[in-house]
Length: 327
Image 1 (tube, rainbow, N blue to C red):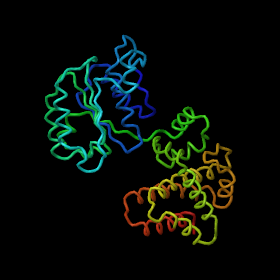
Image 2 (image 1 turned 60 degrees about the vertical axis):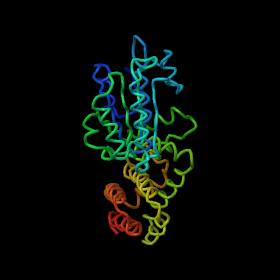
Image 3 (image 1 turned 180 degrees about the vertical axis):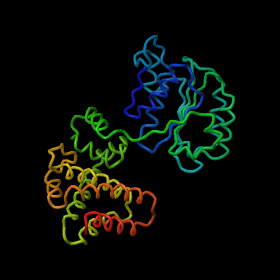
Image 4 (image 1 turned 45 degrees about the vertical axis):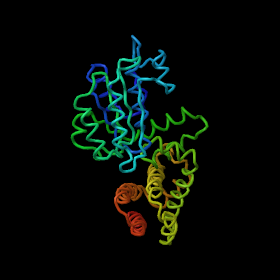
């Protein structure tokens, strides 16, 4: 079979085995943050199930595939809540339950793609649980959720859970530029680095200009680290007040710049497109301390994701980066 989905090879291998062996369960839960491609993978699975090709599936050529690809297959039911608490109401689940007992119009299956199921309240989850326990033989549910912990253990136990991760940076950059030749590969690398391999968020930041702001702030942080004045870094980081996501993204781009600086003397490829800045960092800071700073960026990112005090966070970023370079 040919599931068109970049990276997450182990997940794709597991799903391929289940589909080809006829062991696909009646419920699949795809978890992951926004932008990782949960809905895209759900549509790929639906495409396979609808395809009527005698050869490799999905063929993307048969009438059934065309209907799925064009969004009007009668045996695919899609609903997505907003994701806010209790935004997925029990009334919607009751409609799904009623519809599920109507046999497919054209295909061998009826597929229900239910998005943002973290918004299912307790009543909605209990209602769909009853259907998962004894579903019609032709029904497949594909639930997407930001985090599986939002769902009841009894729902999880009756499903196969697929946890999506960010893509490999280099593979992701290759994919992005293959889809849009006007995009610079270095920008694609920086965007993917900033968003931890999340292609959706990377593409959004490339399109709305946010990447440019993140790149500029990361470069300003790097230049501030070269300054003898310790307040330069604090001044740059003050731009992150009340903007934690941008700070986390800038730390990822800063890592790429520091990586380029650490390998500059070995003539390795420059990934950040900041050759002169990487050279200056290499000359003035040194490889050992640059590597220590890269490691520190990882720790700061983890700290930023779990700490709610922005002022304390900015102070810690400045202190830890300065300390890791021996100041």
